[in-house]
Amino acid sequence: MIFNVSFIISLISQYEGVASYEYLTIFILMLLESIIFPIPSEIVLPFTGFLIALGKINPFIGVTDAVAASVIGSVIGYYLGLFLGIDVFLKYSRKVGFKDETYYAGIDWIKKYGVYFAFTSKLLPAVRSVASIICGAFKMSFKKFILYSTIGIIIWSTVLVYIGFSLSSKWISAGYDISSITPYIILIGTIIVLYLLRKPIINTFKRIRRI
Image 1 (tube, rainbow, N blue to C red):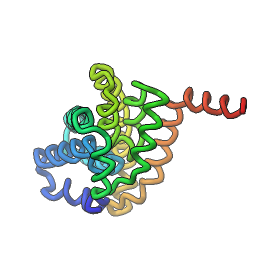
Image 2 (cartoon, one colour):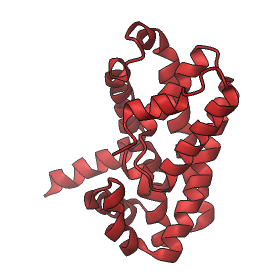
Image 3 (cartoon, rainbow, N blue to C red):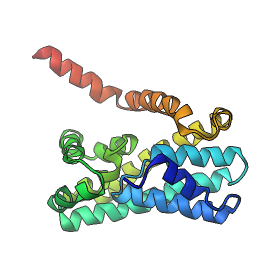
Image 4 (cartoon, rainbow, N blue to C red):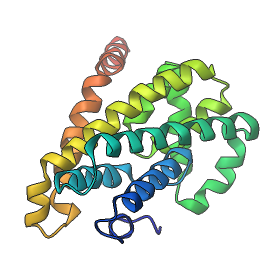
């Protein structure tokens, strides 16, 4: 897969100090990630926060840039799913790095939680990249889709950008090595997801106890 950590960081920082290029690259990466491409936003967004901490990009523009790209990409993904259906993506998405299990997990979630899937899926790695396609394929109400998706996107983007910003000193001391802050990203992200999904998780445990 070409969208690895070193590739993404080198791509964003290729023309260091040129804010317009950095904004454009962040926008394109988040746009593609929200349509279907397996680009880890867990890398793009914290690195955006890192650039904000260094004073290279404006915090408001940086976050808005990422959020807008994700919303637009989600709309594109929704209509692709609506008009093409899920079977097309199950057939060809392996070529860009997705496993069938990613789709099946998303399909199970949308059957269980309906429109809330549009929100929760935007807080989950991997599934978030195919969530819009699944919502479109299941003909979810577009108004509800865009509302719930946008809320999830804003939370996910803001939190990960802030993590990158707050851990910038650790990143610098490690020589811009993403692995130095990855455990923090995973830990904080997991806590946030578990908190937001606490009701479905509690209900699941209650059902298990009744069996």
